[in-house]
Image 1: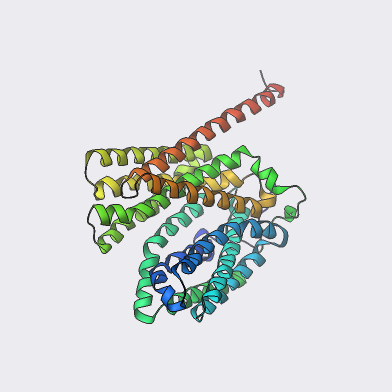
Image 2: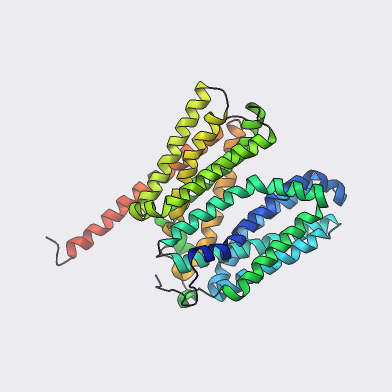
Length: 411
């Protein structure tokens, strides 16, 4: 693995977070802030609801699959150029979307916007891998990214609704364009190239990465963590508003406590991760998912839906999410420093597929008006991850025994 540290990347963690976080958040915000205007868009664009649905579905598809293109590209031409190009695409298309009046143009611009978001996202996380892979700050950055991202589904639709009510639907895309432009202007003088010199590699990167048991184990852990939040996000309105009788405001406040639990856990994550290590942190994170699922099961069987039976157990799952995502990127990507862009792309793409397919199936098959989808997803994926981690550790012990036997210091 290349031992590369960019001499020009000397930002402290708060400065690095301020520089990187906008590109992570904007990719998700472009989906969530747009949701309140979706019902009105068929009339605005004089098209069918099915065409408008494409602006959601295709955005998500391109956001995930585009990383499979931009990851390898960033390994060849560098993170900075991919990030700046992606941010520029996102900003320009956001402004153009605000002026669109034709359905075909609107769908096409959303695709280009998703390409820009995908490029910026993969370049951001490849940079984190380049700079912080061997440093304790990585746990803090990854957990803070996840904690902040948890707020986007909660606050994005509210912000979109307020913008639409005050200035109309075009204000949503103007806001996205302004935010992307601000992030781009901040990055131009400060985002220095971090790609290792060995990044121009010739080995078949995809095959090499996908054959790694370590990569798969930690990617499964990432999928378990983020998918649990996805299922919670998907079922919480139906459980809290539909079953427990919460108002929209009450629901938003209750939902926000789960994100707050993630942020509070982040405050202590670095200290614990340093003591537990990668495997120990992932094990404990998955254990918290299983314990939270157990509490949800008890609440579902023994009581009626309420804040304490549905949201409070999610606090424990939220803590498990933070401890898991604090280490899963380093665990999955640690052996691929020379092809970090490609590895990051696969990491996010596989996670998106698992969460999108399995998470949706859980919501559909296990009654989304109950806690059962979250119980099912968290239990299944945590169990699969712990099994994979156990097999990986057993394999590593077997591989280290011959080396120890051959050591001259061995008894």
